[in-house]
Image (cartoon, rainbow, N blue to C red; front, side, top):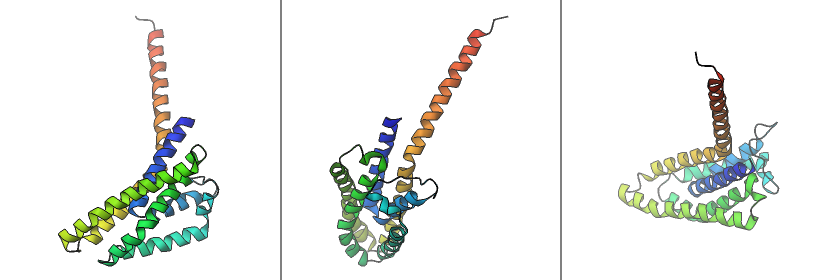
Length: 196
């Protein structure tokens, strides 16, 4: 199951970095909450120094930053300034999210993990940055809030899916194993029955 864990971890890391390219604080907050809850067995186990993301003060700070980001990104003209600021924040968030993934940080060089996250989140952010002026020009700025809302929804969905990938993979593989065991058991039962 180690190879499955590694594949799930890589998928999670890429998914979270992609999400960070759309909105830095959504995947950071979701990872922080997953590292905190449920309290007896958190969904994510982050290695040091990334385990600090599960602390209450980080969760609170990310919630405030997310609220500011969501509001500011819906205001015409201010959203352009926000995108300039986020040019540094989103790739950094992607790098942290990629490296913080507990399943691969021990198997991959932290520098390589940070670089991959930086490139993925930075690429998504640059693509988003290139598309925004087109939306602004074609809608006279009135469509920016809607596109921003869609980006936020996509960031939430991608982040949640990225965290659930290892769980989904495990369930699918166990399901396939159970199917084949039952298939061969039934087949063996049919072969063993005498024909009348």
